[in-house]
Image (cartoon, rainbow, N blue to C red; front, top):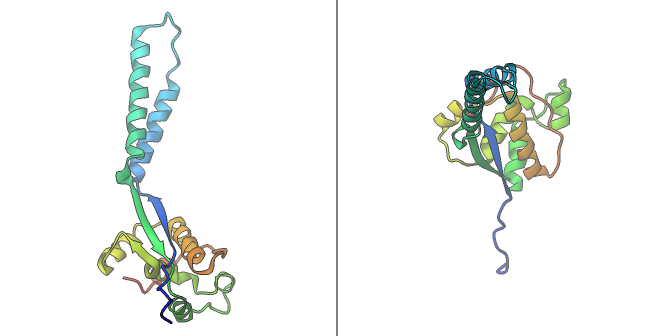
Amino acid sequence: MSNTRKAKLRSKAFTLSRYPDDLHDEYQAAVDVFSAIPDPPESGRDKDKSKREAAAQTVRDLNERLHDDDHELKGRLTALPFLRWASLKAEFPPRDDVEDDLAAGVDVTHYPDLIRACWLEPAVSDAEWSDLLDTFSQADVVYLTQIVFELNEQSVSVPKLPSDWRGTSRSG
């Protein structure tokens, strides 16, 4: 087999929003304040105009902070070699009595383990992974799991997680 080369596995980039909830709340409050200030008529008072302009600037500043790259987690997931993926799925078989498990072909409470196995970038230690996992919402986990299945099985509908998913992962 001298003509065979090691195939490069597919990978896919992702972006997760990571802005603090209080920043989003502050932005929404500023939008509400701005919206509550009536647009003064052209011959209106300068005080009203400056109040509205100041509120508009606050909204612009907060919007810029919300869309700052510091509030995003950018990374890349990779497909696994076939035998590694099959082994991982066998390690977390679907529970017979759980419809979502049967649909996904794995125990859905182990989605974080599947994500960790496919995690390529940014590089994180096991301790960092555990801390990072604690910041993920259910939507983040489902989004990343969809990418994992897309990379490893081309196309699969990923069921939602149960509410107690954080307690069953073996990652970290």
